[in-house]
Image (spheres, one colour):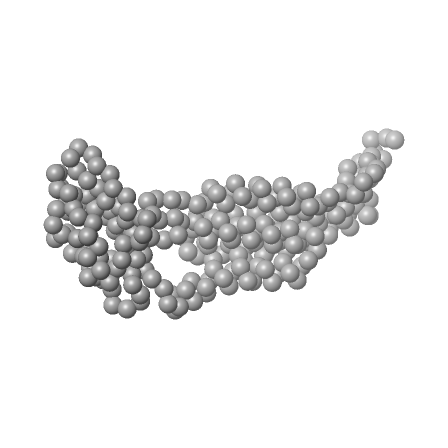
Length: 247
């Protein structure tokens, strides 16, 4: 078979039709990925529309190619067995796991990036659905994912919840606080020190206490700025740090 005949196999009517179908799948996956990623981009997250679009499109590409094994390599290689898309999907899920882990950050008691990691995983699932031809399910999942990130946060704020504040206190040299005193001070301001969150370190004569204070409810509790003002006057405190204990 001449080189010209081999090249023409890649441009046969059947090959072009298959490539057009794959292109439409990739375009649809890209648009759905951009839809999900817009919310993250709007909120200033590192993983934005480009990340989601690429993840969704690549997942669709790796999945859809398994549906046309007879057209691989210009149809010149006879496929004795059907391709198994489940193995490709397994590889996609594994790869996305590493990408999702890269956006999760932990600083003290605060964990950020969990929603972004979960939505990247959902974006890959959307691509897989497009790749295997479940277009309606892919569109529904994209809309549900975007709606979840846009509106569930508002629902969480509306439902009864307990605010958590991560607190770090460094005391003056040779000053040793009492746990009962801290718990009483927290209780007077509408908070309770979360069980198992207390961590104490001691260095060069100074003790440092880290813990999470959880509000009793959504009632009248001291805000973070109010807590900061009061901690500045708290006996023995030389340095403090407050932040919302997000996860």
